[in-house]
Image (cartoon, rainbow, N blue to C red):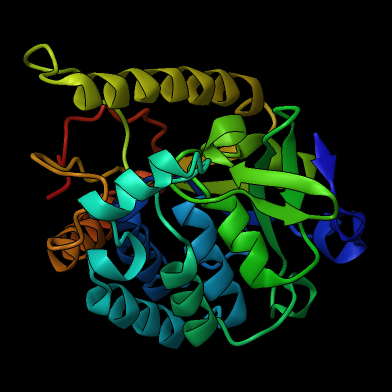
Amino acid sequence: MITTEAAEDDTIRKKKTVFVLSGGSGLGSVQVGMIRALFEQGITPDFFVGTSVGAINSAFMCGNPTLEGVHELEKIWMSVRREDVFPVDVFSTIISIFKRKNYLVSSRGLRKLLEKNIRYNTLADARIPCLLIATDLMTGEQVVLASGNVINAVLASAALPGIYPPVEMAGRFLVDGGLSGNTPLSVAAEYGAEEVFILSAGYPKTLDRVPSGLIDTFAHSLNILIEHQFLRDIEIYRKDILIHIIPPVFATGYSSYDLSRTAEYLSLAYESTRRWLQSGGLHIFEIPGRIVKPNQWL
C-alpha cells in the first residue's frame, strides 16, 4: 500500500469511528440515504474512507460533516443527470477509438460538478480527515490519498479505466480505487479504526438466470471478484474491529450510469437503514446477500 506523506498525520491516527464508502457508480445516492439515517441517530464518523463514487460522497461530507451537509448532498444527487457526468454518444466513441485514446468519456463534466459543490481546496483543508482510494495504473498498487488537491484526488479515485482518463498526481497515473479496494476496510484498520460502518452502493446477489449480454456478464463477474475480496477482509478484521454492514438496497433492472431513479434509491436506503437501526441492527452482524434477504428492512 502506498500513502501520501499527510496520511501519517496523527490527527488521523487518533480517530476511532470510521465510515467506509464503497464504489458503485450511479448507485452512490444510496450511501447518502444511509448517512442521513445514521446522522439522525447521532452516529457520526471521526473520518471517512471512500472509493470511486464513495470518494465523491466522502469528500463532500468531510467538508460539511453535519445533517445539514447530508441534506445538501441529497439535493446535489437529485439534480444530477447522466449527461452531466457521462456524456457519451456514438460520435465521441468513434473519435476516441480512431484517436487511440485510453478513455471513452471526458471528465470535464464531473470536474465541473465537483468544483461547484466541494468548497475546500486540499484534502488537508477538510473539516474531518478524508482518505480517498485510488489505484496506480502502472503498478496496480493501492494508493491512499490524504493530501493534495481534493478535486484531482476524487477524479483519480473515480477514474474507471477505459471510461474516464487517468489522473496524474505526484508522478503517478491513477485510476479507480475499486480495482485495488472497492470497500477499503483494510485502510480504515490501518489508521486505527475501532468501529467501522460500511456503506456500500450495492453487493452482488445470486441471480435467477444467466446474465444476458456481454456487458451484464462482465459486470456480474467483476462484482463476484469484488465480493470475495470484501469477504476476505471481513474475516481478517472483524476479530479486532467492531464492524457494522449497513444493509444494501438491491437495485433491479438498473444500469450503472442511469440516474433517473436517484430519488427512489435514496429514499429506499434511508428507510431501510432507519428501520435496521430501530430493529437493533447495531447489535447484529450479518453479511448482505448471504444472510440478509434483499431489502428485508423495507
